[in-house]
Image (cartoon, rainbow, N blue to C red; front, side, top):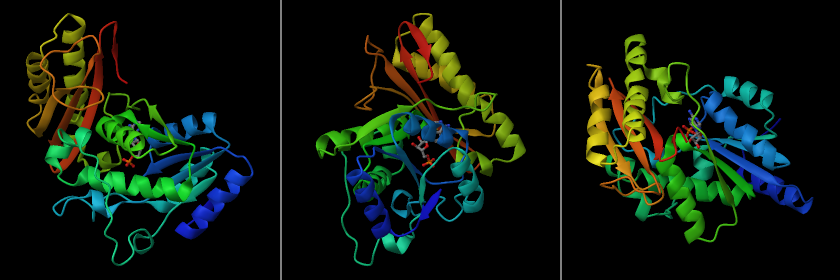
Length: 288
Ligand code: AMP
């Protein structure tokens, strides 16, 4: 596995690979890798000749009171995991190279950024769209893989690619979970043993609402109440939002129609904010 730190070198590598007719797959991450991230490498591998994983904890997507400084990091371990999973290039740029002095261009995707995490974390998706646009320019991918775990992020990127005519195919990867149903996340490392045990309520909330949906419940307000009741079973949990939204527009719906909807939750377990979601779609309960 090749490790590239310089954006100029990354771009040169990409142009060369394209000249050779190779298909490039990109997996953008913030590192502290787990099986969720590595599953994305597998999907990129199936579709491409070369897989580039980026590891960059992007400061512009963190609010001033958020966990940028304490975000978990372990580059040596990440290198071993990425290589073992068949990554060809690990792109690990430095902050000063990505955001040079005087940097003042930001990508703002309005529609799907508005609710859910966009409401709780002002400016978050502007930071995400900006770094992803930069990575697309530097890595020149044919395909980029994003996890459904961050369903709103995926919707924002799909909107950006459509709106700005970016020639990149966006692939959605299913959510990878721990055996007790907790969605894998780098931030799970921050949970105390007690918080980790009680974090199961996120999965329970999605399951309870999915079961009610499968039994015929279509009212978003009632599905939200069912999910919230499960979250309240943990005294350590504090709801940021529980919401039923359109799967693409990410706008709240009152009833789940034939197109289905997304049930999304954000919950603080102690000081750690966790998100999870599930698709409500008639004809089956789906985690994707
Ligand atoms: P992050 O490092 O948290 O920014 O995540 C990098 C990519 O991995 C994003 O596209 C995430 O949606 C995806 N991802 C994170 N956790 C999971 C998971 N449990 N299952 C599937 N994809 C995930």
